[in-house]
Image 1 (tube, one colour):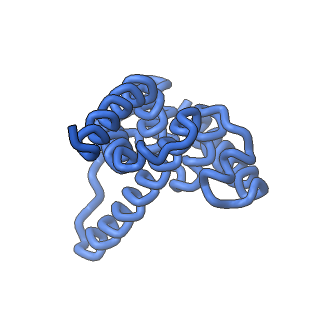
Image 2 (cartoon, rainbow, N blue to C red; image 1 turned 45 degrees about the horizontal axis):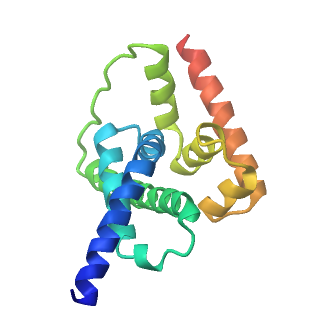
Length: 168
């Protein structure tokens, strides 16, 4: 058996094992960042595809989850950056924004309020409270200082309290 064929089989087995182990957690993080189940699935698949070529170079399998989470945060950030650019283009075309359906439950109201936050605030809140990361870990993932994370989380939670208080 050639070495490259053996490497592909080895890598595929490792990828399947890591996917089974981390996919549900990754999907949860992606959903909380995006608020869209289909987009979350796409981001998780894209993240695994990006990481598939790097599996043979993975020194610590315990670090895979953090690497996967960082990849998902980066992909979500890129998605929303692209979407903001598309939204500005559409606004220039003078089309009215779509009408959102009414809130159906407290959970839906919370999700919608979370989606109204700016992406950096949303990312900070999701990583701190839903992923239960420390300020330092969140700052590392977001590539900012811990003080910025504190500020983003504080502003995000204040906005959420205001939005959710106004809805009730």
